[in-house]
Image (tube, rainbow, N blue to C red):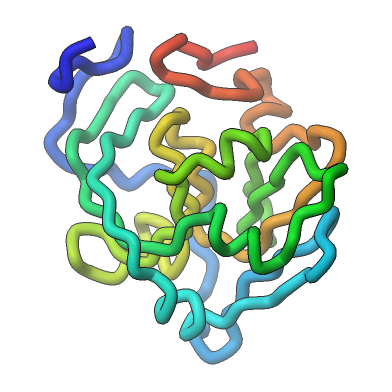
Length: 186
C-alpha cells in the first residue's frame, strides 16, 4: 500500500474536526490525575505534571474517523502507553485496557493493540498543548484504530482479563475498529 493511501471508505479533510458526545468536562489542572488500576502489580496515579514531564515521544500519524473522514500527518507528542503501563507492571491475566474520561465515555482495547509503539498518552498536538475541544489535557491516541478508540479527556486506564465493551462498542461498533479492514460495525 502506498504511503499516500487512505483506508477504504475514507476521504481526507484538512483539519481535525471537533466531534464529541456531550460537552467537554471542566478542567482543573491542580486536581487532574490519571489512574492506572485493575490487573496490575503496581497500580499508579499520575499527575498532569508527571505525564507532561515524560511526554518526550513525537510521532506523525493519520487520524481516521468511522464517519469516513481522515486527517493526514498530525504531529503528536506524548508518552508511549507501553512505557507507562510497564511502570504499573501488568499481570499475565491482563488482556484488555478500558480507557475512560471518568464521566460517560470509555473504549476498550486489546492489550496487544494498546502496547503498540505508536499508541500515546498525548499531551501535545501540532506543537501545542492538546486543546480541551480535542481531548486535552490528555488524550489517548491509537493511530491504527478508528478515532473512537482515542479517548478524549483521559482520566483512567483499567486493565482487565475480560473485555468490557466501551461507549461505542455497546452501541454496535466493532470491538477492534481497524480502519484498513473497515471494522466500523460489529
